[in-house]
Image 1: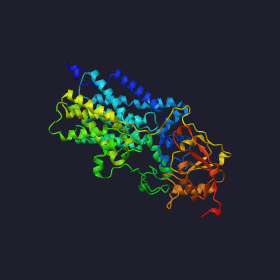
Image 2: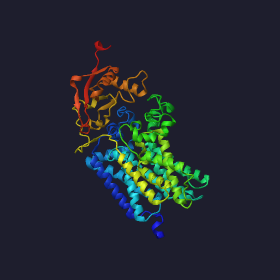
Image 3: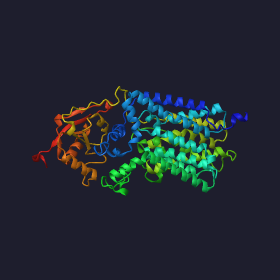
Image 4: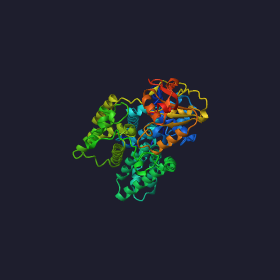
Length: 544
């Protein structure tokens, strides 16, 4: 075979990029339309409310309506809010799916850098196929056209990884200022993402470790990692610094309410508020944790799913380690081996950081997307001959596709109106307060009420009757006690007992005979309606 046919292509042909972009946009957008309209729990809790509240200055006016999530950076979901306000739901879903589908571009570009040399057309086809299989994972498909944002945030993370892999010779060259600028740019991309959504910081850890794994003197590796880290900090400051400052000024904790055992804001309990439900218990469970993605998904996600790509990659990685001495990587493939090594260090480092901090599957989406590339490379390391490697790589990926079952975060049939909300008539909205009880998501309703209506969450994962009330509970007590005007309670019907207990703690009771049922279109598949009931003080004679 002529040398020109087997040498690695170092540039990305424009035709290949256009093909990848078009394929990704169509696949992502059309799949999102086929799956149906997004109606996930977090959308109804804070994805729509938070940007609305920020744009309309409701921080501190409404009190904790989206529970702990009230205090998340609203910038991530601002584009979603704006397109929902401006466009029909089907077009919103298509655009969100198409944007996630664009991950095919950096994903295929990464594959071209890592795959063994082959004829250009065959190599490009393989890169696109591996990319499409990556985007067909249980987590990725489940988020197509939704407001979560994990799949869209994968774009800058993948671009950062591509940049480090593509420019690793410059990064490793001592004294090369251009290499340091590239490391800074890669860090900036990653930091911008982490500033929008803090769990994305696990990929900053993985990329930083990849910088330390460069084939260069240790002084150069450390310098590149430090410059990359500075870029990460700059990116976080740009997209998240303003919100950290706002939280510090308002509540005395830049990560409010998280890590409040360190910052000790009086407005929250002295606790870390971390969701530790899915963290592995002990080293044994941590070692076998990838198997949960297949056998016990409830150990790592709130909804059922099944995906075998990361367990398959983990098994192959262990086999590579066990056979490493007998099957060394050819020394001739220096540059290719360096890139593959950096890639695997990134994957392993990001996974370990994720396992330590979260162990929530949604936050592992970037690695799910990259897993088919990792599987193909690991099979090639186990089987040096190209033909058996291609055959077994195809079998492994076929098995992965067969066992995949995407998660279902909640979908609805497409509607002309995204939420389909009809609010109750209010006689005096300027002096009305709505008390939110229970833990079900409902803050997405707030933008449809008259702006003067104030919403107070008297019961939630963050607030509620307690023997040791936090500062927000005490604020709520003062606001409720000082209110003069109409008052209502809003809760899910199955949480009536809990709502009654919460109201009683404030000396109030709901007029159950006057309750109105709310059934917004986005909740058409939920069996229990929301109830909107007037409340009044409990008569002295009825108090215990």
